[in-house]
Length: 345
Image (cartoon, one colour):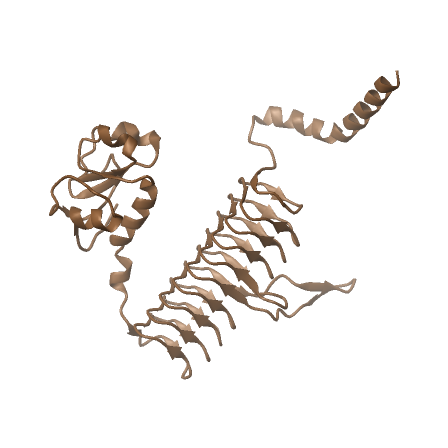
């Protein structure tokens, strides 16, 4: 459901997308909706053929769609090669969040005296900004968030409520940190003496590039010595764990519950599906896609799609297969002997 605080005309919409249209240019558009639920003052979009059945009966003011579906559209159409990208762009027009940002420091916030702030900074209720922090123009520090000493936050970056940015972290421009994420917490570093564990101080930091987004309750640990590095335009979903000294290349995307162990390097334009686990000290080259729930224990040096594990099946079938999994090594050895005997004869 869209809660628009204002409206745009259909002409505004087309101009924003850079597309032509036929229809009432002055028609007010107050939000976005699905094909099935759209009202006459909303724009719908068709990006998945599974919803093509809803196009003929839509009540939308206009539909954003691929040119191949334009002839079947009963209302004004906005044609784009990538309608889902168009939907993403339009969603920004109707986002009510920026309108609620009020520059200034809330009376309950705690801001150190030597903090450097740009223009239009908003520090909301009960936020804490420690010594030596630099905040760029139009930074938003959400309610209850903490920014540790000597950290740097770039222009137009937003911390939602209850975000923790630890000391000495560098954050680029237009970064979005969702509620509950922790940037720059200690990495998992301990030495064992045979009887117990001794903590290794984590002396590095974290550097986030421009246009990064980190989902709620995700953790990016600071480096043990050097920094943990997240490249420009990296998108990280909720409940992701990135360990110390990991490097993520620009434009990569990590779905929910991904876990990356220490000192692993992920290339540019990579995609890690939900629940993927990467072991430590690996190198994943550019252009790799790892499907959900896969475990990667060796470096990947060739772009492509990689998978591991087995899909769900009936428990009775899985139990039979599990028994056979334990026999695979013995079966392989027997097969090898059989092939050798066949060659010898």
